[in-house]
View 1 (cartoon, rainbow, N blue to C red):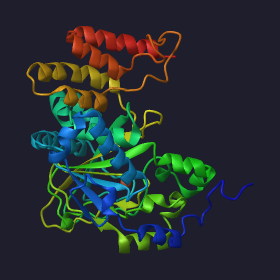
View 2 (view 1 turned 180 degrees about the horizontal axis):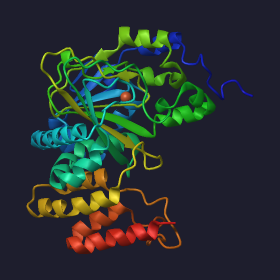
View 3 (view 1 turned 90 degrees about the vertical axis):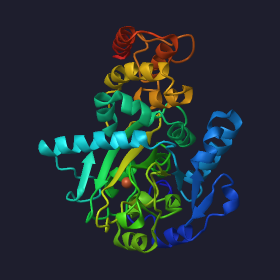
Amino acid sequence: MRDHAYFDADSGAIGELETLTSQRLDTDKVPHAVEVQASVPIYDMDALRPMLEEGQRRRALMAEWAWVLGQGPGAVVLRKAYADTAPIDRATAAFEAIIAREKAAGATGADHFATAGSNDRIWNSLQKLCLEEPETFALYFGNPVLDAICEAWLGPFYQMTAQVNLVRPGGKAQSAHRDYHLGFQSAEVAARFPAHVHALSAVMTLQGAIAHCDMPLESGPTQLLPFSQLVPGGYMAYRRPEVAAYFRDHAIQLPLKKGDALFFNPALYHAAGDNVSRDINRMANLVQVSSAFGRAMEAVDRTAMCAALYPALGRLQAARRLDAAEIHAAIAAAGEGYAFPTNLDTDPPAGGLAPESQAALMARALAEGWSNEAFGAALVAQAGKRRP
Ligand SMILES: [Fe+2]
């Protein structure tokens, strides 16, 4: 057996971590950033938003983000990812109502890496928001900045999922970790996957946090260790005490404002921070976006979401409250964007190599002005054809 084919319990040694994470970001590498803090580039999306609609300039910005997330420090702050924070406030109100209702029903709100207590969690906030308040969903996820950063790391047809995390004053930090896929496996299971699959895990998802309130340092915004995604055996290492201690001593935190977003490589060592504020209920919507080619962590009923969302998108489009790029982003967050796997007997390729995806069907129906009933029937028919 070649010894580099697998990692073992000692992989991702502290010396390697130290060498990789002691580098500093060269600002020449991030010409679109407005500033760099603790090696993390910060992008002013108010200034950059117009670029997203200009093919070559959009590609240049996406290429820079992909480099930062992959070979660079592994994290970006998108300042003013929301030009208008009104959709965030509407979503916050919806999430607070969901939390109150789920608590009354006895939910515990624990997450994977923190103890339950001062922490409220909404699993699958994506589907819950879409089904309960489709118009709020459309305005919130109809955001071309989110679409661009997801496309930059994952390519098109990504699968959006989201979970709300609300940490009240006194809420404790998470332990340092990496995220889905391999970050959610024990070291024993991770060791059974060959080294090349460890490298694959990091490009199958993108992790993000949308700030629903101002998050000064005392409120505990995410702690990050820039460049730690580069440690090859890191999925084996993050639980070891000396690695956790190194993380505590060297992790950085960046304050966020409501409407800012932080995106990072899922292999970056990170952890939610301690909320030592007196009165800040730190609410973030954590978006976990999956490659079209992977399987997302959460099971999402995208057919139900498309049925709920279509009438709202039709109204917002007619009232010119969402432009074409915003409609595209909202559809990308809700519908299944990838045509496979499907039943090729009953759902053969339509004039190309792939059948029409759910997201493509919704975009076509909106463009052609189908009635809600016609779209609903087509959605059900499409789901039927795809069943094995
Ligand atoms: Fe995490």
